[in-house]
Amino acid sequence: MKEQTHLKRYDLHTHTQASDGMQPPADNVRWAKEKGLVGVAITDHDTVAGLEEALEEGRRTGITVIPGVEISTRTSGKDIHILGYYMDYHNKEFLKRLEKLRQARDTRNDLILSRLRSLGVDITLEEVVATMGRPLAPDESIGRPHMADTLVQKGYAKDMRDAFDRYLAEGAPGYVSVPRVEPAEAISWIREAGGVPVVAHPGLYGDDGLVRSIIEQAKPAGLEVRHSDHDAATEKRYAAMAAHYGLIATGGSDFHGARQGVIFHGDLGSRSVNDQVVEDLRKAAAEQK
Image 1 (cartoon, helix red, strand yellow):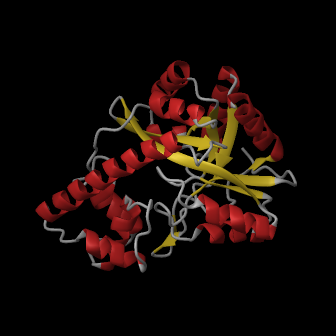
Image 2 (image 1 turned 180 degrees about the vertical axis):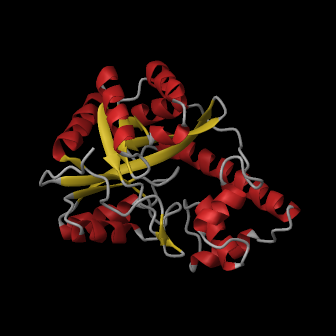
């Protein structure tokens, strides 16, 4: 599918330093403006810690900032990510649930580092945090990209992709999975907080039958059709799937910033949607209230 050229473009999937992105939330907003976007969603992993800073910068620059989150779930032996938009990010129950997910992430990180050490790869959590160049703030979390960065800096991998392929990707020797909530539970959490749940980057799961099963059983409101790791044929396939199930077809870059000169997954604004998609998300959120 060709990049949408509608005047009003939004990137609905970006990460910041609040999870495993490289930039402060305000930088994502400023960069969105520089790239000619009118809006950007902040969708950090299992945290909403970056939203206030981004919203303040949005007010200052005139960029629409869409409150979001990306929740880590697991089903049928696969990690599945669920995006949420326009939820009440002050909702106490929602925040408690996200905190539990971050605790699971912390446990996973300890297990990954232990497994790496058993492989003769000696990196510590303190070194990973030091690689960030700043203290870890409350409600922020360490992710595999942080570890990959440290692996490269210590000479265990030649670049970020090599670090994942060699140690951290699913199926690699250092990969560890911990118990997570099911997609349906995360979707319920987002709805209960007044938000709109969307299945993220379905093409990364390599199992369209599973994607359809999640849609049919968990009833998300949307499917992320446009994504930096989806080629044109993949986007066309998921656009058809979204239309079949009556879902909002969303999209975004999954921007994390650049590590070791490599941008994962795509540059901010490299995938976008127009204002009709955002209006559909707003309407769906209003129906949750």
